[in-house]
Length: 147
Image 1 (tube, rainbow, N blue to C red):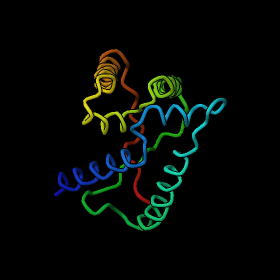
Image 2: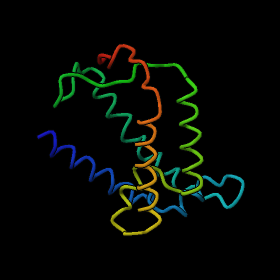
Image 3: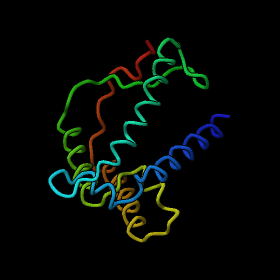
């Protein structure tokens, strides 16, 4: 059942990215180009996502556990370490250069666009390399319990 719900959720998320224009690199670059020909349309996509997400979080706040798992998996770390900042910078530079980030890139694979395929291959290679080279972060208490 978990796999079916995960497949449904992922498909719904991918469809939302496609319908919202998040898989169009030109639109994303236009949104990020604040000093040039700024395209504010993705701000509406983000706003609509927040309007759906906030009430959902409010509904889940009183639950002790999710419907299909034993506990919620929430982040516990609150510090900003060099690894996090460096990763955020690399992510931002890649997003700005390519107009794609991981979710929209994967949702965009169906187009067969060679640039998208190259992006996804490079993304996977980067994740693989990071796991081979980097020191694993210290575990700090695991997942936080739900509120």
